[in-house]
Image (cartoon, rainbow, N blue to C red):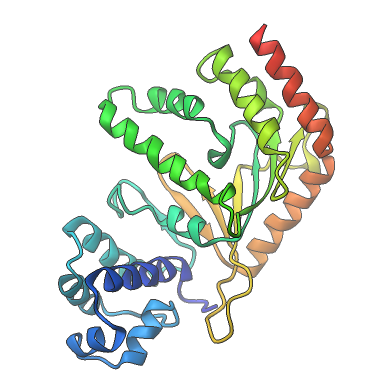
Length: 293
């Protein structure tokens, strides 16, 4: 990985360039001809094998492929952001609402390692839990916008239940998340039952970090997700893991090997301090009964 640039925006830009070229019906050779560039150069952009991309090329491609204005604007922003070493992605200022870089990365991942101390992870939230959170976060939002957000979350969750290569999850949830009421007792009861049920799937490891575990490793870790992209097909570029740190006004993507290793090690320490999977599942079901009563 280059010390001067981030691969995160390059990966997402490459996926979008390939997606919109395919939508336009153009072959790689024909698109390259229209862009007055070599087919190999276009292939390098689509595979995120190039570290510097001229925004004029992306702008021209968007015109040829018929990319809508807001998405085209976001794609140009991705090309500009590629020069940033650890990429800070500001949802409000950089990307349009329908171009979420994290969602693109998550969809391409094969492994998902996460720690969430006080909230149910998005991939494991029930619709009612999700809606209750959104109602508080965006109280004046129109119903149609809220419905759209729910639909996005539900589409993301298909990754863990699909028949072909479901996403592997290794998740630790802090016990506080089980006691912080979201939407009331009925919503929480259904949410905890859902966690218990989904944790029986072969591709999901779910553990609860109990209060009595304190602070494993001696520090209070913030929520984090590590996305792993597995071994690429022969001849394809390698996509290193990415650590995703979500914030209230923006999110940080960490790609440096030391940062990734640190978070993997932190997750191991937290996981070892957490309850075993069966014990965690029993706790979830017991608390669900308590909420129901």
